[in-house]
Length: 215
Length: 258
Ligand SMILES: Nc1ncnc2c1ncn2[C@@H]1O[C@H](COP(=O)(O)OP(=O)(O)O)[C@@H](O)[C@H]1O
Ligand SMILES: [Mg+2]
Image (tube, rainbow over the protein chains, first blue to last red):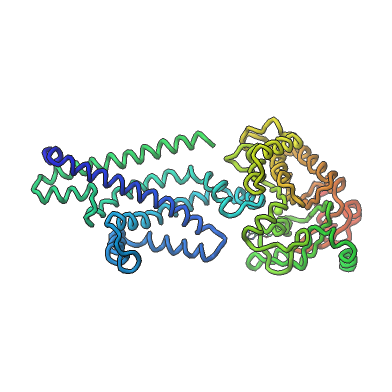
């Protein structure tokens, strides 16, 4: 009990850190995932290959390894001077984008072929067809898997704590280093995560219901 | 046959709207289109007929490049079909397509279905697009359904909306792939009447259909396909009363008995 009251400011900072990191990498993962899904169904072979490579790479690499790469390879090879927070954002969002992509792609596959063919016959470009006709109809089937993906992302963001990014899980380490009872620390941390994940699934359930009514 | 088409080419090049020359296409080992030569003049109505699997749909779909071809050339109004990209999109806008299964955009209202191409492809003003869409919907007799979603309409109504949607682009030529095959019998005529009207107004049309009434009354020419080839082409009356090839005789005897 004491541990929370004694260090409420730190806890709040960690909680907000997790929320922000999850939100930012969720957003970036969404954008990347939808674009890569577009690549994967595009008529241009090099784009399709790039999409397949992206998904294969980021879906099959352990997230911890991606964090290590973001910490020790990316600064040397690509972009020196990235803050730890940015590195965590990159690792988390690239990793998650592969899952978003596959969810979106399976959603795209549920939309009957004829819809895209009719759009193309009208003279819409590939991007117009995807944006105006196919993706809006895929949304409903994509919402449920996306909810799981973002919950997984929330929990995955804990790895960033081990890399000294201020977030909820990192608070646990600081507190146990200070000798507080481990059980209480874990309870509060778990509750913090529950609040976030419950909010996500609630939000998506709401979204699902809204989309279920509209056609 | 060959002599005739060569002679025709010499006279009226500018009147040729759709020209297929030695078009070949495979689906894997299956040779679906074999050396197809077909010229369609401006304002001409051509009915394509033939047994299931003979390549009629594929032929239709190659004309707006929903299917690519392996060899040969297809030109529309003198322009060869471009490769995938903006240019192809522009050309497709000039070729209206009506599908057997309607393919109306399920998440858009009837009105939006007819407006979308005008606004997004032709970059028309929203208000003008709506006016035109409503006029077209009235013309095909579904003006009162404008604010409904496709699923709320009967098949015949949906197909008429699909025709209006294609017409909204002011196409140079309209392709119909068995437009009445998915319809209940009592709805077939309402669609055929719209098509007949279009034919009378001078629209260039390529129609895959087994509706012989339509072929007789609206078509200038019947093209009979079997096994990926054009086996015979003739004026409708001539084709139906006096087919030359055995394949056509055999096919006609089968559909006439139904
Ligand atoms: N996408 C496709 N992939 C493989 N085979 C196809 C495809 N589309 C059509 N076919 C085959 O090509 C042949 C011609 O098909 P189609 O053009 O639809 O004939 P029709 O419209 O005259 O019935 C059929 O044997 C069909 O099975
Ligand atoms: Mg067919």
